[in-house]
Image (tube, rainbow, N blue to C red; front, side):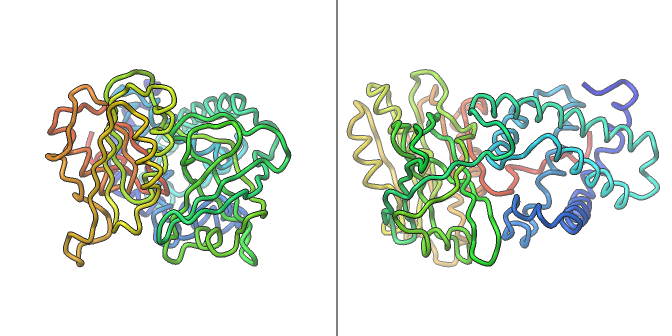
Length: 395
C-alpha cells in the first residue's frame, strides 16, 4: 500500500495525470523507443502507428494508482498484465528502464508541477506496481518451466487449414520432439514472426483447441495491412517452423458446473472453441450456450468445429448474428450485433467474452441489465485497446 506521505500527493495529482495521459504516453514512447529501437520488437508497429500502444502502460500505472487510493483489489489488473508480459518474454531488468522513461515523461509534460515530493510519490506507485508484476511473472515463468533469457520454442507447422474466407488455422508440433505443454482452455501463445527484411514482430493468438498433449492450434484472421497475419497467411507453409512462447493468459475456464455462456465476435471465437472442447471432454452434462457475431457465414471461422463439439454435450444452444443483415455503413466493430433479449441467460451463468472492445462493452452492459454481475463476466482484450478509461478525472 502507499505510504502515508505519498497517498495525499497521489490523490491530489492523479486527476492531472489522467487529463494529460495521452501526452505523457506519447513522450514516453517517443523517448524510450527513440533511444532503444530494439524494443520495437516487443510492440505491435501497427498499434504504435495508430497511437493505441502508447496509452497502455501509462494508463495501467494510473489505473493502479487509483485502485491503491480507493483500496480496491488490483490482482485482476496485475494478473492480466503479468500473463501478457510472460508471453512476450519481459524480464525484471526492463522495469528499471521503463520506469526511468515513464517518470521522465511525467516530468516533461507536467513541468514545474512535478516537485521532488510529487516525483517521489509517483516513483513509489510505479515500483509498487512493478514489484507485484515482477513477483507474479517469476511465478508464472517457473510454472511454465521457462528459465534463462530465451522463452521461445520452435514448432513445426504440421497442417495449415483454411477455416473461413480470411482465416487460417495452423496445427503445430514441437520441433525438438519434447512434449507439447499442457495449457488451460482459453489461453494464448505468442508467435515471434521473423519478417523478411523487417525484423521480428510479436503477436498473441488464442489456442483454438483444448489441450491434447500432441499439438497446438492457432487460428489467425488476416488483418488488412497486418504484417504478421499477412506473413502467416501468405508465406508460412506446412513444414516451416515458428518460434512460439509457452501458453499464458487469464481468460481461463473457472472451476464449477454452472451454466456456461460463451459470447464472441470475429476471431474472438478462438478461445471459445478451446473452452467448449474442454467442457465437452470433461463435463458433457454441463449446460452451454454459444453466441457468435460475424461479418457473414463465409467469414465465420470454426463454425463446423463448434457445432460438432456442441453435439457432444447434453445441453447445447448455438445462436449466430451476421453483419450482412445490418446497414452496410455500420462500423465493423460488431457492437450491438447480438440481441441479448433473444439469448437465454441463466441467472447463475458464467460468461466468457472475446471480440472487439466496443462489442464486449455493449454485451457487458446488456448482461448487467439481465442481472449478471461483473464477477461472472470474464473477457479477453488483445492488442493495446483499453477496456475502459483507465483513470478517473476526479478522486
